[in-house]
Image (cartoon, rainbow, N blue to C red):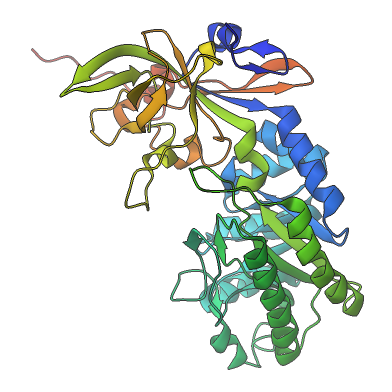
Length: 427
């Protein structure tokens, strides 16, 4: 009977070596997916990896080695990108709530640009740049008047904490003059995520490029950088289809070509996170116990939504399952219906509801596929103090640990100074 393998490494051996639960990444899939996309995209459109999707330094390094820049949203992500080898001028920093320390780090690292999201933030950037006797490179994040098309989660086009409303900027032609230590250099718009329509991506891109032309002319600065967002989706659920990259680039590339011809010095950016990493990752958890309850089968595993909150299906009225397979019996046909749950003391800890699988038994390895994006970093890993799972990357045929799992001592160490006296146990 066959088992799931990654570059010739069998899942049984991998689980024995690294334990479960774990996230398992296929480096060939990471590198190959990015390379295939870049070969089809217009050469003027740079791909920036959104670390929020998967902030593992090894993942960032591998994608950077294959041509990705970095978009970060926290101090730790900035340090991760730098540790992964990304040069400062290939880093963008965005987020609606940047601290002064984060803005100072952006200025001191001399990154490509700070993507600014509000008038008060712009004033802080101006102040901190003035102290350094320099001009800060700033891209304006715009919440446009037009609405998102085809997005699973809208990020603009309606009241949002993200960016300046388009009308606010159009009503403020003296914006640059009021901030002498800011060099306005571009526009960024991120309309939404999980877009699975090639036409929608192209239409959003067209409108963003038109907005960049309109807004930079009105505010009186040259468009040195235009970020068209991204939001390219991945098909997780039944009745969904992956984007056709050839169709997508066939629609988007002419738009980029026209804009680049009119603005030959402008850097054009597409941010991608989920699209680059989701298909490369598998969440691996081991069945601890099997049971029945009111006529339904349950497999209770050693990891669940504490590591994979996306599997809950938040935002959906009906629970929809990620693709789930029995990894150690890969080719055994499904014949039963199972609920896959984790170790948490909550009925919401269900990573698969009524999944068609082979008969399950304790010790089986369950895999949640397409799980390389928004995994542990977007999950309540400290719930019940189970901690972060191991992360393993298979690259060039060799499996290596790229993040060790949390042990109880790791979780306790941060709770009080190590030299603090222990509290006596009271009877």
